[in-house]
Length: 278
Image (cartoon, rainbow, N blue to C red; front, side):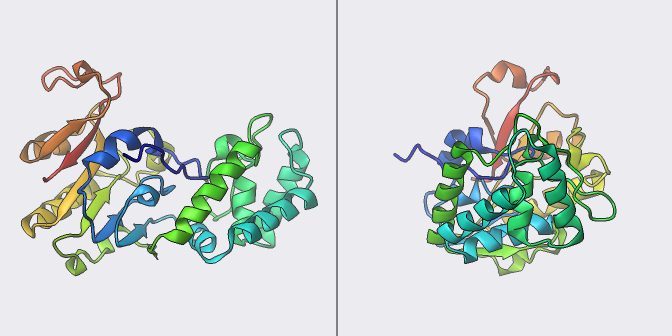
């Protein structure tokens, strides 16, 4: 049984890499089209065996970056990264070099590989833009760099991406055309968690209306006989999910089910779940 998983070279908030050994075995064994509806860093989709993989995400910079990775040879990508590292003298200690690269990206060249090299040296490897669309994460002093470990992750990810039949989509889930899906296809949804305090939720980007709309979409898939899996965390106060989940199968992923007791959920502790309709 496969138990080694490819890790995304992007550090994404809420990334599911550590949970993959529990999530992937719960997916259907045969999948025609796999839809990664909130694809993020692509930790899940890159590890799924399916005839077609549809990666969707609303963050256009990440979608364009993954497309770029897919279209370019791995060695060519590494060469481009290394040239930028040399040009800006990037290291864990050189804040000035990072700031120059960030300015270069924001003002002159927003090529995806410039974007990727920049986030490799940013604080916590995070992706964040201001209201004017300018990348604004500070330098990851003494922490962030394109180190040998990240280079190996990058190579494994890039080579696996080239092997897979991946299509890219850059729309909100509300605009995704679920009507094209059929039995044998499979939708995985890992949305922002309602009432969580993650940075992607700070601007009110995930609200009551969007939560209810997603759950309704999943109900419609169920009515058509299309399988889905929803990742979520019961530690957050979410009355919509609490009621909705009772129609389906709830798989507790933490191992410590005592945190997830239906009557006394400990809101201070994680209670990661995968909710499926099969």
